[in-house]
Amino acid sequence: MSTPEPELVEILDGNMALQAVDRAQIDIQISTARAYPRDIDKCKKDAMALATMDEATAETMFYVLPRGGKTIEGPSTRLAEVIANSWEHIRLETRVESIDDRFLVAVATAMDLQKNVAVRTSVRRRITDKHGKRYNDDMIVVTANAASSIAARNALFKVIPFAFVKPIYDRARQVAIGEAKSFNKNRDTIIERLVKSGCQLDNILGYFGYNGVDSITMNDLLTLKGISTAIHEGTITVEEAFIAGDNKPAANGETLGKHRPTAPREPEVGQAEVVTEPAQAENGTGQKRGPGF
Image (cartoon, rainbow, N blue to C red; front, side):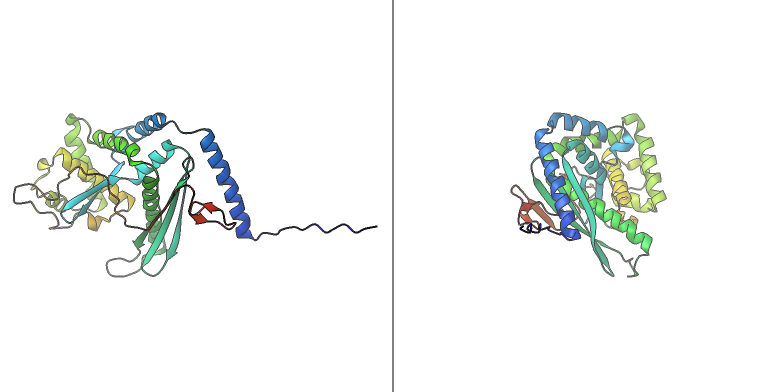
């Protein structure tokens, strides 16, 4: 009577087991995405409805950064959330990659499951104050969350075509201004909000080269709302928002710091890895997959 051959059982360590589960989940998600492809028109309609739901929502859809006498404007983390929700078939992951005595690095990976395109971006944030003292634990958590949100925004807007984002972004800016009859109320509200955040009224007016709030224009109102969003998201600090002397009136009477409509830009220069089909990052089996998946 022969002895049966022993059955070979492959035992995977914890990491390999998790990778196998992740691979299976992604394969299912990709199959689902390709079986039910997105309707671009419906996605745009849904995103437009969310981004312009009301004036208060619309003004969180963009940020403005004062830089060297000019302003840099772009789509905010809130708009990234709206776009990701409406675009469909998007996989997004964020994590804090490293923390040392002075800096932390947050990493985000976005993947369009239908197109099998993935992008990984990183954002570095300082965790010391202007005197070089390290933040306490709570402030480090706040900084890490802000960096993760910015990294996620940057990754999403590298995966999702800007041609889809721009009309929604432009419409949100228009809605954020409000009707002409509500201009004074909007102006006073945003100034009050900035002052409560710690900004000085003299610095706000000095940024535009004005002596009083009555000189503030419609474009200036957009700039103030964008700066308020940037402060709230943690893209800039209150101290960086309105630096005295940073924006002086130009010789022709225009204000160098005055808002100019520009193509949205990203304030972070972080690392970015782009993967197109077939993906370029290897997993444990030697197959090609998107980064972080």
